Structure formats: structure tokens, C-alpha cells
Image 1 (cartoon, rainbow, N blue to C red):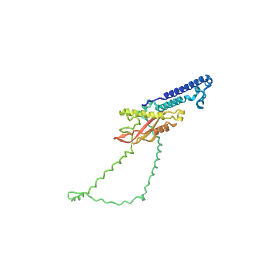
Image 2 (image 1 turned 90 degrees about the vertical axis):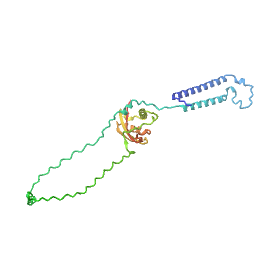
Image 3 (image 1 turned 120 degrees about the vertical axis):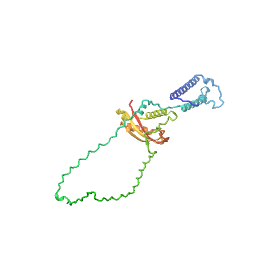
Image 4 (image 1 turned 180 degrees about the vertical axis):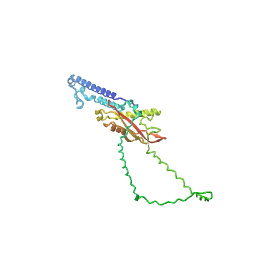
Length: 303
């Protein structure tokens, strides 16, 4: 049989035990003060003690050791009760309301265009060629050509040209080599059949509800562990930081990079929280775990 006790109930029980103990001490003190007011000397004037140990307290009515067994049993009972309270004290994680951040996961995230260096200026145009002066002495000597009359008439004899010898056709070129096979173990997917999920919702049967539960668990983990940077708080810096990371085939987190940073230490804090995450349920493609890239927006908002 097990039962749960809150922190308030523990403090109330300790306060009640302390008050009851003080009440017992007060009543015992009043009892002994009342006994001392009686004339015990006259009562035990002619009393003969059977042994010196019997009369070590002089009068039995004011013997404080007589109640020792009762106080011992009471102390053991209190110790047992405190031990039961300590083992039954149940603590719960602080529940963070993340309903206002759920919409940020489905919004389109605008990626900042990376800054590139300006293209170099075009080269200057080549210089215009200078006019070439032709000198008569530089001209080659032209030989006189004689033209042969190749006209024919009806009496001319026509000789057929020799038949062309058919040459062996060349063999067809070999087919191009196949493209290199993609190593699926190293390939990083952006869209998969089963997306990676934050742990804690494996018992949910419905796929949509399981994904929503995983998102809530992830946001609760982030916003219960995140610490607003002091520099950002002092300067009133707020906004959204976008972090990209890869969920490996075993569920671990790697390749954490900042896609958008608002400065003042917010980006480093978002990377720290992502690095703290436990192992995810990995994404799957064709029922096989694969590496999946995940984009996570983290909103920093001053209260």
C-alpha cells in the first residue's frame, strides 16, 4: 500500500508533532511542580529504604526516571512517523504552461539570407588594336595559276568513279557509369515518413496525439530549464532564436547550429538547452531509423 503526501502536509505533521511534544513537556513539568509543593519530607520521615539505589532520588513522587520508558516509546513512535512521512513525500516537476509556444512550431520560419561578399568589379576592356599598315614588300609572292577546261560534250567519255569501300562502323560508346550510391547512414533527411519525437509519449496510440504530446513535453523541458541571460534581461533583448540540429539514428542530438540569433547570449543559451535534451525517438524512413534534421524555434520573452 502506498500513498502520496504533499510538502504542505509534511510541514503540518511536523508542526503538530512539535506542538504535542512541547505540550507533554509542559504537563510533566506542571506535574512535578505540584508534587514538590506537598510535604514529602514529613511523609517519608521514618521511611527506611531497602537499598541505597531505591532512595537515590530521595522521593518517588519526584522521580523523573520513572517516566523514561514512556518518553522512550513516544520518541520511537515520533521517529517512525517522521520516517514514514519522509518516504511518502512526493515531489512533482513544475508544470510549465507552453500553450502560447505551440503555435511557433508550426509557423513558417523565415531564414536569414547569408551575407556574401560583393562581386568584384568587371575587368577593364582590352585596348583597341592599332591599324596594321600593309607594306608591299611584306606581301607573299602569288604564283600564276592556269585553269584547265573541264567542260564535256556528247563525244566525251565519262568514266565512273570507283565504288566507295564500306568501312567498318565503330562500336557504340559504353554507357555512362551509374551515379554513386548514397550512403543512407550518413545522409541527412529533412522529410521522413515518421518524424523524430521527444521522449515521454510512447504510450499514446494515435499518431497525431502522440506528436502533439511530444511537442508539449519538449516545450515543457525547454522552458523549465532555460535561463534568461542576464545581459539580455538588462538590455531588454527579446525575440526568437532558431536552432537546427540532427537527430541521429540512435536518438542522440548532434550538429547543433544557430540559424537565427538575437544576440546578448540568447543563442548560446538555446544551444545549451538543446544539448541537454535526452535521446529522442529517431525518425524512420521505410521502417529504418535515419538521420533527420530538425528546426526548433525558441522564444525569449521578458515578463
